[in-house]
Length: 177
Image (cartoon, rainbow, N blue to C red; front, side, top):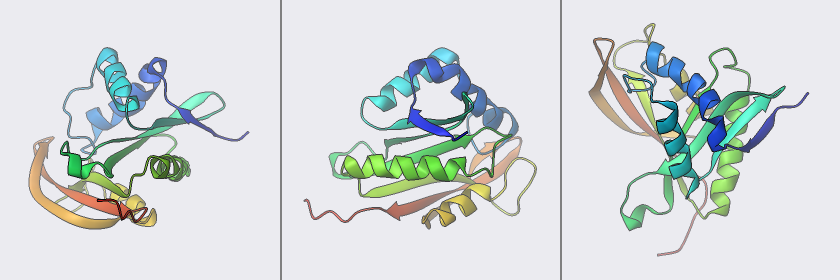
C-alpha cells in the first residue's frame, strides 16, 4: 500500500494536532509551551490554505505527517519567500514521509512562483539533549537547505536555553522586480 499525499482539510485538525502535541509537550522542536486547542488548530489550517499549501501524508488511512508553507515576512518585497514547517508522527519518523511531503510542497510552491524557502529550526546551543537533537537540521541539509542565520539562546523551554537557526533553499530564479 502506497502512502497518499493530499491537501489537508479543516476536519484533519484533530489528527494533525495529535502529531503536533507530542512536539509541544515533549520536545523543544516547537517553542510553544501549551498545545493549541482543536479550534485554534483549525483556524491555523484555514488561514494557511487561503494563500499557501498545507498538505498531509497518510498510509492505510492514518495521517502520519503534515507540512505547510507560511508567510516569511509581511512586507510585499518578501512575496517570493515562504517559511516551511513539517511534523511527522513520532512513531513514523525516519520513514521518508518528511522527504515526500517537502518534495510535494516544493512543487506546489514553484507553481505559485515562490523562489525562496526558509525553515526556522530550534537548535541545541551546546549539545543535543533529551528534548532537542540536530535531526531537523540534518534533514533540511539533506533536502538542499543551507544555514543562513544563527540566533543564540533565543528560546527557553524546559528550563534550558536553545538556539534557533534559519535555513534557506532557493528553488527558482526569478527576474521579476
